Length: 112
Image 1 (cartoon, helix red, strand yellow):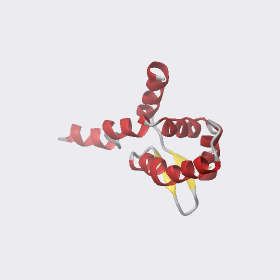
Image 2: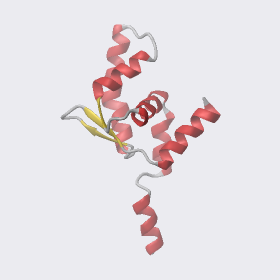
Image 3: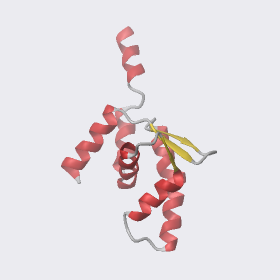
């Protein structure tokens, strides 16, 4: 029983939740950006600009991407305990761990 409790304390999100979180290319880009930044906290607008810079979106695509960021991508990553999403201050804090990093590395090396 103690062993099972220790395991659940170490592992904050089920593997399936992490897989869903890194399944989307935009979410992977967000995680890689957050991991690479020196700052602990990143402004959501900074993330939106980063996603926009990955392509040449039209104005309507840019608005759509920002909506997806706020209502889909960031909540999905927050639900997986990979980030902390502060809607009030419009900021994101990266909380990734070895499992997230391993998944991102695997996807980058083997699947992209």
